[in-house]
Image (cartoon, rainbow, N blue to C red; front, side, top):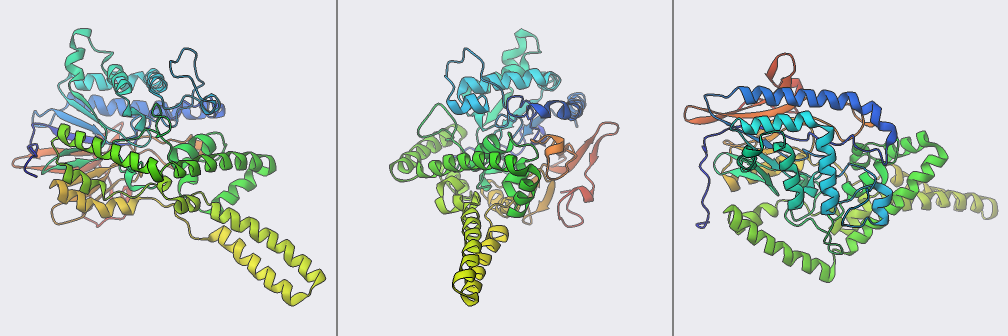
Length: 495
C-alpha cells in the first residue's frame, strides 16, 4: 500500500455525524395522496429539531475547532418521492414512471431535489449557515439517495444548500461541501458509510456503479427500491419495514385487513414487481454480468486514484459486502416469498384433492394427501425466510473495516437503531440511528420517535473522544441513555 497517502488523524476538525434524515419522504402525492396531511406536523417537527441542532453547532465550537458534519446516507428520500411527471423533461418518462411518478434519470432526480429543497427550506438555509461559518459538510450516499450518483443532481443539492448565502461567497462554500459516492475515511481515526451494502435487499454489489445495464440513463432496481415503488407506496397500511423484513404471518394479517378487492390489487402489484425483479436477476447473468464486472473494475481503479486509497484495500472492503439479492435467482425467489406462494397454492389444491380422494378412493389415501397439503401450507406460513435486518452483519464486519482503515470508530446508519459497541480492543462500531422515517406515522409497522441521535467526535489533548448523543429541543445535546441504545455492555455508550 505504498501508493497511499493517508490523511492525518487530526485534520483540524471536530466531527459530528448523523444519518437517515429522509427529507422528502412525505412528498408522495402521486401514489399516496391520503398521507399528506397526517405526515405534515411530524415533518415540521423534524425540520425544527434539525434546524435547532444545526444552529447550536454553528454557534458553538469546541476548543475553537471547526466542525465537519458527516451525514451517513439517506439524507434525502429520493427513492420514496412520488411526483407526477411534469412536462418539459429532457428524458421522456417510461410507462412505469407515468404510473408511479418521477424516476431515476438525471433530470428527474434534479426535479426531485428541487422539490425537497422547496419543502424543507429551513433545513437547507440552516445547512448554508453552518457551512458559511467555516465548517465543512460531507454527504455520503445511502440506498434512499443513491440517485445522487448523477453529478448534476449533486450540483443541484449543493446549490440548494448555498442558495441562501450571498452570491459572492457561494463558490467558496461549495468547496466545503463534499458528496461521497461510497464512504468517508480518515486513516487512524474514522470510517463512515451508510451500510446498505450489507443488506441484500438494498445492496447494489458495486457501490460505484448503480446504473442499469439495459438503460444507462437510470439507476437499476433493487428489491427495496422496486417494492417500495410498486407495492408499499400504493398500499394503505403497508410500511417499508413490513415489506422488507416481515414474515408471511404479517402479510396474511395485512391481507385480512385489506379485504378481497384490496388483496387482489396488492397481489397484482406484487406479481408485477416480482416479474421485474426476476428479470433483473436474468440481466445479471452471462455476458451482462461480465460487462458489469469489467465496468466495476474500471470504476474501482479510477476511485482508487482519486481517493488515494489503494485498489487492493478497496477490493478487500468490497469483498465484505453481501451479494445483492438480484444476483441470486434462488435467493430472490425466497426473498419475494414466491416459494411460499407456490407451496400455499399447492397446499390449497392438495386439500381439495384430499377431499376428492376421501369421497372416491378412501380415508387412508385421503389422510396421506391431507398431510402433504398440510406440510406445504405450513411452510407457506412459517417457512424459513431470507429477509432479516442486516444489523448483525454490519456489526460483525465493523472489526474488519476498522483493521483495513486503522479506524477507531466505524460508523454506519441504515437500520435506524442507535448503537455504540466495541468490536476490538481499539475500535468501536457506531450506528447513528435516525432523525426521520420513510413511512407516514399511521402506516408504520413499529413505532419510532425519530430520536434525533448523533455521534460527536472531539479532540481532547492528544486523542479524540466520542459520545453518542441525542438532541433535545429544550435542553440541547444530551448523552444517549442506556435504554435508548441497542443491546450493549453497560459501559459501552462512551469510548
